[in-house]
Image (tube, rainbow, N blue to C red; front, side):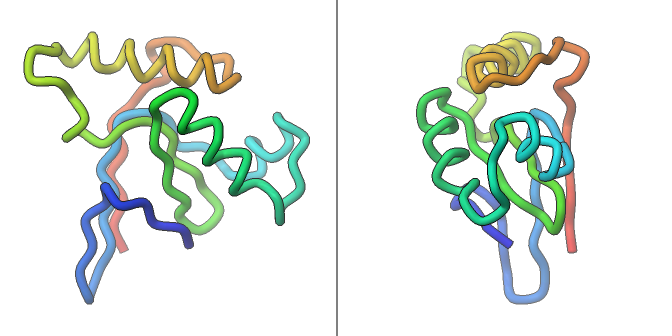
Length: 106
């Protein structure tokens, strides 16, 4: 499991709080014709280019932004639109309604 620095962790659990998308990792691998062992560099680069973050939790990938990345003067709608713009630049065909609040814990 890959953990990015914006996620909250402690010794007994891991929590992910995100605005963005939650997809099965295999759908992203297939979309971009990636092999299972070489996807990290590709996703890292795409996220750097688009200003997005990601996390992998078992067989799922979350792509978007953590709530603490919301600008002080930004509305939730504007924040979600910014995430959507990044996801489209990432190469994903999505709509505003596809952006959701994601919370996972183990």
